[in-house]
Each structure stands twice: as C-alpha cells, then as structure tokens.
Amino acid sequence: MILYSGPLSMFGAKVQIALMEKGIDFELVMVAYDRDRGYQPRHPEVLRVNPKQQVPVLIDGNVEIFDSTQIFEYLEDAQPAPPLWPREPAARAAARQLELKSDEVYFPHVIRLMGLQDRPDDPAAVAARDGASRYYLEMDARLAGREWLAGDYTFADIAFYMAALFGERMGAVVGQGTPRLLAWRERMTLRPAVLPVVSAVAGYLASQGRPVPEWLDAAVRQ
Image: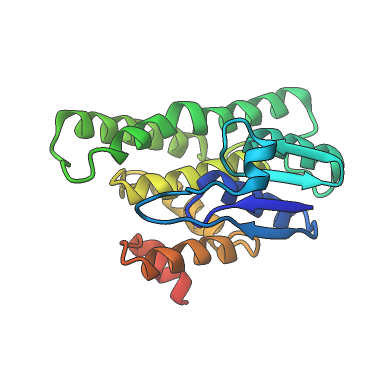
C-alpha cells in the first residue's frame, strides 16, 4: 500500500495511525507543503485519484481511494484483525457515528478558528471555542467507566484524537474540567502506533517555528 499524506494533514495522520495499528506494511509519501503556497503544486497522484485534490489518498494495487473514513472502511475489510470497529452491529454503528461527529460536528469549530487566530476575542472565535468545549464535555462524559470512546479502542478514538490535536493548535484547549478526556489523550499519545505519528507532526511544527501544544511537546521529549 502507498499512503499519500502531508506533514500537517490531520486526515492523513488518522490513516497513518490506522495502518500502523493494524500492522500493515505501507509506503508513506509526504507530499510537498509550503507555508505560503500550501500543497501547491498538487502531487500528480493526488490529482489523478482524488477530484477534491486533497490527501489522504491510498493506493493498494488496483484499489485507489480517498477520504480518511472511506479508507478506514477499506482497511477494516482488507485486514479485519486487529479490529478497529466493534463486531456487534449496534456498537459498530455507535462507533461509526462518533467518528463522523468528530469530523462533522466537532471539527467545524476548529475550521472557524483557523481564520481567527490573530483575533482570539472575536465573538466568532469565542463561540467556536465554546462549541469545542461543549463537545469536550460530551466526550468526557462518554469516558465514564471506560478507557475508549466506544468501549473498545476504535477508529473513533483515532479520529477524535487527531481532530482535537488540531483543535488545540487553534486555541480550542482541553481544560482541567474534563479529566477523563485528558487521561484518554495521554493513553492515546503513548500508543506505539500514535506516538511516532504525532512526534513527526510536532517536529514539523517546531521546524517551521510554529507552536507545539505543551502536552504534546512533553510527551515527545519523554
């Protein structure tokens, strides 16, 4: 398999972690990224496979797919063990919905913050951080009596971990009022399939003079 990702692609990092969790051998191609030009010029394979012109793109022989959630589904079908979706239908549906909510309910708050980094007191930025904080409270409540968001460790954990990491970068900080979520984040960070991926993200941020969340910097330096 070949995974096309980018140094600051949250969605590419999700797929990279999933591949490593499943123990699948793959080639990682980090497409060129420039702070001013972004991903321009686009990588030709990304252009060819994805009409949205975005990473991640996964190529496995004749299989060529894009979108991190669709890639999750392919990986689970191609290599069921170890499972990253629950086997029981209702539990699987709940985990899938959590993965969807991470991208479609939580992450829009982060997207709104991306254009307001120099205006943290802007009412829109305050509202976006408040929305993210409410979501953190919801996930903290889900973690009562369990280690992972959907019971077992699943794609839902991978998705929200990366989304929340990017949320932190934009100012949507996970506070002390969500202790279960903070403990979950620490468990996630230290997983053997997660730490190398987020260490690379932290290293890239540092190399570009961009701030690294303190908790991530501390974990990487351990």
